[in-house]
Length: 203
Picture 1: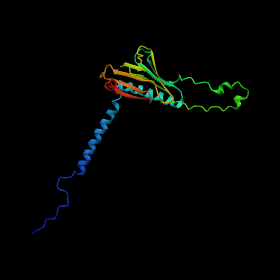
Picture 2 (picture 1 turned 90 degrees about the vertical axis):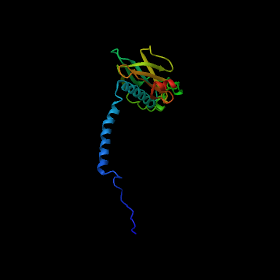
Picture 3 (picture 1 turned 60 degrees about the vertical axis):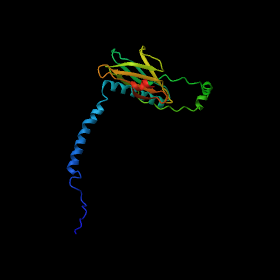
Picture 4 (picture 1 turned 120 degrees about the horizontal axis):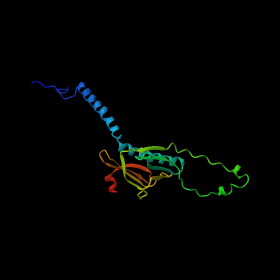
C-alpha cells in the first residue's frame, strides 16, 4: 500500500502570473490617467466656474473679516458691459465702536505721551475679484431673508467673529443642462456650501 504525499504546491491555474498582474495594473493606470483629468475639468463649465467664484469670494471675505477684526463684504453687481455679474470681496463697513475713557482724556496735556499705543491689527489679506459667467443667469437670491433681485448691487457682510449674513444664491446655465444650483451660507459659521434644488426645498 502506497501513501500519497500531500501536494504542497499550488494547483495548476489557481494563481495569477506576474505578466497578468502587470497587464491589469497597466490598464488601471491608463484608466486613471484618462479619468482624473476629466473629473478635474468637469468643474470648468460656466456654471461650475460661477459657483466657484461665489465660494471663493465668500471664503476670502470671511478670512479677511477674521484676520482684520472688522466687517468684510461680498458685493455682487451687474457688469459694466451689461452682461454677466461681477463679484468681489473686500473690507469695509465695520460696526461703530463705543467711545472709550481714553478718548475723553486725550485732550489733557502729556496724556498722549504716556498712553500706550495700540498694536496694529494684522492685515486681512488680498481681497477677491471674480465674475459670474455671461451664460449663467441668477434665478434666486436672498440676503437676510429678503429678496434684493431688483437692486443694482447686493452686499453680504462677514463679521470678525466668523458669522455672516444669511445668503442664498441660485444660478443656472441657460445654454447647458439647465440645472439649478445654489450657494448657501451658514450664517453661524460663515461657511458656504453648494446645494441642489432638492436640498434647498427640503429645508
